[in-house]
Length: 338
Image 1 (tube, rainbow, N blue to C red):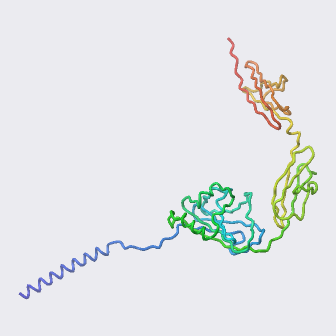
Image 2 (cartoon, rainbow, N blue to C red):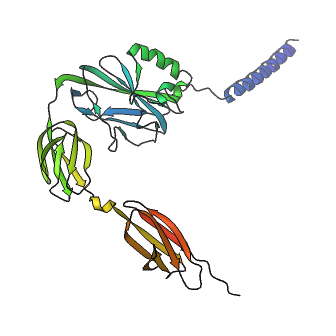
């Protein structure tokens, strides 16, 4: 009896060990869960031309640069020292805010007709960049851009409240932000520059902001920094004018090509034909054979006739305007003889 009890005890222990090992093996064979902290999918950098943390004087110009590690849609906000928040990109001049990866952008760029001038009051100013993977605009009202750089918040607190509502539909991993802080100094930066004016033809009169300054070629010194209007005039020529921006300590170059008035008193007609070598007459006067250019044609209506033996006469009435060249191509119809 004791031997049988011991035998069953051994068998039960073996079976229990077998099942336990199988269960443990099954548990170890299941994949382990690894917790990974979520990471932002891309980076955005924004800075100013003098560097973040720098100081600008009132009257200086400022350029904002930005770059993304992947294609995205970018919006720039300017938190001014007086507390207002402006949207400076996209704007009236750049309505498309899609940017390419690893490309440095500048606002304003070299081809832009506007500048960011530093204005009072003095204090801390911040440029905030918000980049999204999908198209996003802070407010629909800025699409028309009645203002070049519209105010989107009368205070930082008001803007923050609006921003949280507008950005909420976009998942957090699909947008990112960055900022650059700089300072505005209360001292106004004085400055003067120069303007070098040349023209073709020379010895033309130069007017700066309506005041006569001399004849070309001319260098105008001690010009205050900022926008100025240059007008260049010469007898028997059309006036030339342009608005230029003078920078402190720099020379601005202006070249004016003056068009003579007589050039616009008459026009020209160029006549081609198929087949070629057809005779051309204008208002009944023979001018030669195609391909032919008739110059110094008076302004007004003219009758052009193209004639070639064996073909029907081609007649066309054309109007010649000042300084205009009229192009006429005559498709001649072959005569059939019975």
